[in-house]
Amino acid sequence: MVKAAVLKAIGRLEVEDFPRPEIGSKALLMRVELCGICGTDIHLYHGRLQVPLPIIPGHEFVGRIEEIDEEARGLEVLGHELSEGDLITVVPGTNAFCGTCYHCRFTPQRPTLCQNRRVLGVNMSCREPPHLYGGWSEYVYVDAGHWWVYRVPEGMPPEVAVLTEPMAVSTRALERAFEPGFPTSDEGFSLGSTVVVQGVGPIGLLCVAAARLMGAGKIIAIDALDHRLRMAERMGADHIIDLKAYRTSEERVAEVERLTGGVGADVVIECAGVPSAFPEGIAMTRRGGRFIEVGHFTDPGGVEIRPHIICWKDIDILGCWAYPPAQFRKALKALEMGMREFPLEEFVTDRFRVEEAPEALRYAEQRRGLKVVITP
Ligand SMILES: [Zn+2]
Ligand SMILES: [Zn+2]
Image 1: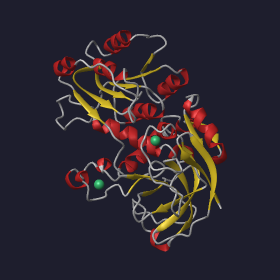
Image 2: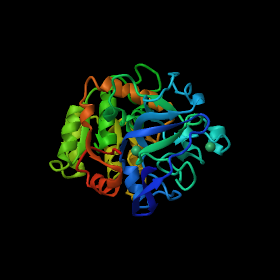
Image 3: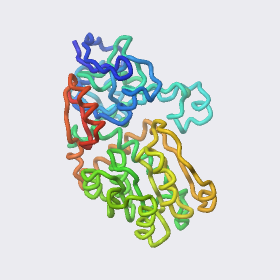
């Protein structure tokens, strides 16, 4: 039998045993080493996302191949031969291209907009066999024929590899801000750009690290929690703005202006998911700059916007919804590079067993640690 935590109804998370599945054609069984708890899981628990229950939550997982079908051995994304014991990570956005919806047909370069997108640990019900479609479990059933399986690079421990999924989110957020390719235009993000990251939970922290790795100039991190701000500095932030010291929006905007020679930041990335951070971030963005919205994965309500500011500033405001499966390659590269510069192995601060999942969720919700993980 396989033990897994199951979200049976909104607010009801229970441990359940499933039969260990037979391996089908082009499939493999992954023994989970670590699976991150993410804001999305908290949203799911509280019913803020429409998904078919029951589900096994967990979309940020890394594990070892326990059993593999012969036909799956050659299906690793970068061409590595897969074998038992290999450490792997899997893109949770499976079958990312249904191929037939409006967006698959007309905007195929944006696979996350597919109307029939299926995401492991988020909207794939565990009702039908093989059941194991989420990471808060001893095993995940991986259909390598349709899903993107990446072998973890040599020398990268599971504690770092478990950050691949959030790093995919963060690197894509940065890439949304890339300049259009005119070297002297100073449009968007490029070498030496000043970057503000609003909210340095795991996604914001990895945005800081990604910005540093991609050649940012001054990086300014904003948050209220000391342990996050300290980590932001270790991840490459040059300045921090502590919400406890800069209590009003005006003070924080003034501080960003002071730190950017009076012009504002080239790029601002909103990772707080708090509505008031949106107009504040726009106020921090320089004229002609770029503002990226990543934090509002669910809808906590609205905020007053002054459209004139957007018009006057001539700024780009861009949304960011997940990432294409190819993003994992870049995320793993960023983690490999980041391991040399940042304390990525200290990112996982708390571990809970599968049967402690309800407790782990509550703990993560209190934001005491950085990355809280489930380890079977
Ligand atoms: Zn996540
Ligand atoms: Zn589609």
